Length: 457
Ligand SMILES: [Zn+2]
View 1 (cartoon, helix red, strand yellow):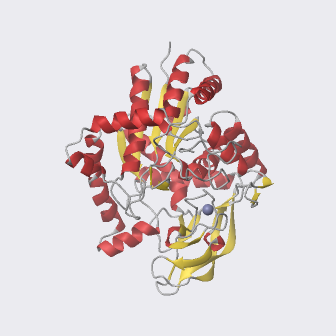
View 2: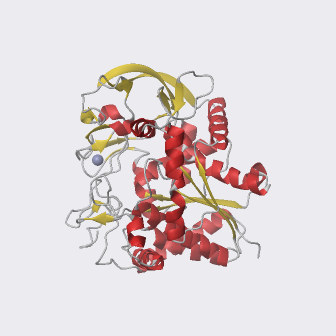
View 3: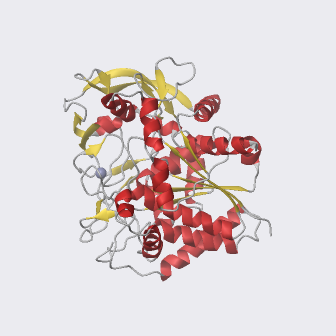
């Protein structure tokens, strides 16, 4: 039986701080899956990288009196102790500021442009009159236009998962100065995700059984014009603003002086850059590796970045003429206080090094995460369950030569396993509060039409 050839990644951590326990959870889940695949005789390249670009890092570096490059290098230098400490073995750790990523991002952009999927438009953008700069999405805060949660970032809502423009926020303010931002005009570049070719491809890619049921259901909401359970309207796929104005720490857009790729354009391309860097070091040919039709590509991510990985990323790859992911494995958040996302900035984070510093055994945490989330609720998006199911199912289906057949088998095994599993009383991996009835603010339950299974929805 030929070994499967797998390219596996975890989400790239933003290089403005050290790893938190959520990163470690995801890496442990992926590491367990990768080890399983290797035990089954499959060939795996498992890579990560630092996500280095964007105005937040530029601003943090300025505050620290460093160049952005120095700043991210210092963060990168601290990574290994966490990975070693929790027995996480990536084959490569790279950076989205590396030359491979600059080259790949610009090549991919040229591919999209040649396909007629890039257009420029003049938009109004928030400008901080005190700091004298256009404000990045994450430095504008305000009330979510969909669910009305307070203090949400300018690009997406951590409570309901909605993705929107910063100008959609209610009562916006600059997180840099606290000033009320003013609107200014600027020319921006858009990836035409609303193009019928993109829509048709993504409807197929997201709904053909490769994604977890809860994720596929959530993503389906974003395609159609419909009224959501909470009465709000979904309007279908919108075009994606992929440019930012100088000053910006990022990758320059070819033939567009003063314009840079929005960090979310080049961040997932960092998966490919890290792989290319690894293969180059081994003397292997990257293009030949990626061109192998047997290659399977999987990404482990948290549910807060589903949009980027199930819409933007596959479409970016597809329409620049590249291999698209076989699936993404989505996990929920570690939560505290009846379902609140664990958050360092809100003072509820756990420092992984403290766990180790107290003399706790890393294997205890690995075991805990593997077993507790494997038994998690049927409506949860907890990762190890999915990954374990996918692992079992795809290994038993490995006699099939068709990736589609392997994915289908994986999905049906997952569905069977979901049906078998029982709600677990101890943990909630979802953000929704146990007392809350399902709504569009309460995914992954939003489309299940089932009441919350107390105490863990
Ligand atoms: Zn919201």
